[in-house]
Image 1 (cartoon, helix red, strand yellow):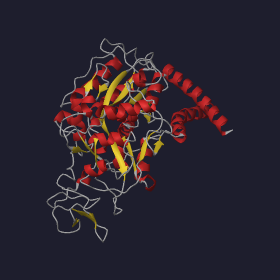
Image 2 (cartoon, rainbow, N blue to C red; image 1 turned 30 degrees about the horizontal axis):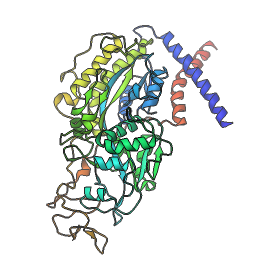
Image 3 (cartoon, rainbow, N blue to C red; image 1 turned 135 degrees about the vertical axis):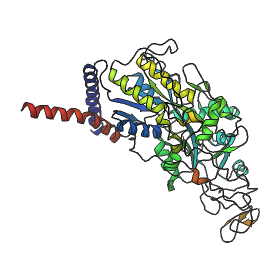
Image 4 (spheres, helix red, strand yellow; image 1 turned 60 degrees about the vertical axis):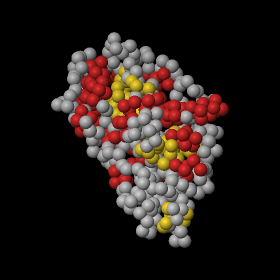
Length: 503
């Protein structure tokens, strides 16, 4: 019965949205005031969207966004169920080819981000480890089931001999179709094809296109667990239930839920975290196709010492007027109010919207991509593009900076010769046989590493600040009801006022 009620509600909602959309189109002549726009898609960019939507609302723009996942966002956009989509995947990655072709579309870069490898482990003394180091190949081996226990010699070797307990690794991954999954396993395939390709063949995964969906109960690792959203993944890994877990998630969620991110060894042999400085350095190796979609092999294998190798751009997808340089464009929005809202909002995202990105776990767009946002606005409106510069654009990259909070921390194991001298009688971890609580200048206390020479790296203070503005609803039924209510209430209020006047 509950299921029937839900189906009935969805039918009514669909009918309402259709009528509501027609009413807006009919009531919005050319040059009218900005109209409400609704978007959905990527959870990778959701923390940035959270700020951009909140700021839009303070400027009087009606923008809504639901983080349903990149593929769902693209599909909804292609079916005209959303005005715009957020994504890291392309239409070519969807299981239904041509889903957006009839409507027409353009990819608009919105922000640079990175995937964090989050984890929850304790050392032999029971202390939480928050400095885990993993090479790209070890990451690939863990997420294809080749390494299944935390005391594996490869993990110990990459952490100065740290010996973790003999506990099974619980691999946490995104359930359903996900652009984050597509990015992460694209990274795995590029850095370790000899591991990825046989694994993919055994498990029926493609090797010619990105994997955007894993099985509901995958057999590729002995122990695994699926969650539908980035919030759920980070919350679980950081909780007591998530002990001995590891997963992939957007870096901003690492700070939001206080979950440590692994230091990843890049192509030059340096260990890095996904801070704005490292994301920006890595994306110097990105190749942009003519439609601005991204080819990231040069990012995953970058030899830049600062590069964080699991970095990528996120995109906003909109309609666009027919253009010689964008054959995918197929005409402007029929509602000029939607065009007006998106054009104003995108101009904000290109410049002012980039100023705080480093603080919440992203990296601002480079100047050339901010200009591409301006070019995309021209394809929305049919007007000549605005030329952005340091004089009219607040994006810190125009001034040669990534903004506050984007500086990379010092590697806490950089000056440590070894961890794994054992555990002393009082339970204190030791290094080279010397108690971490003693006077040795080479000491490294498990869970709170100090660099050789006695100076604490204190790198945790550099962690970006979580955004504290109004939140984006998750993709639960309650969130969908809330979005529907936001759209219905103004109409209902107008009807009541009209009845009172007529009465």
